[in-house]
Length: 88
Image (cartoon, rainbow, N blue to C red; front, side, top):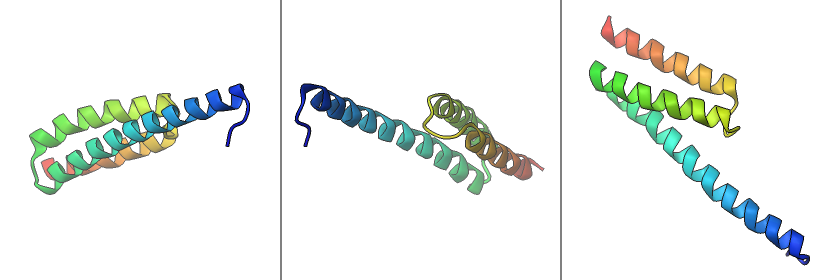
């Protein structure tokens, strides 16, 4: 347990950052799942719309350090490949 005022403040800041990161990570994962469900349903229009939203969230997560930039790029590439496959 934190004893000094500084340690108490850092613990409080860490907890608020953890909650914020968890929320943003959950929103990002949900957006990716929406794209994958649309792809599974062979719905190209909704897959493209969901991909735009997921792409923004992935880029934002990478920019803020929530995930690595290469992971964001890899996920976007894989999803985009799947979308192109259902359009063909």
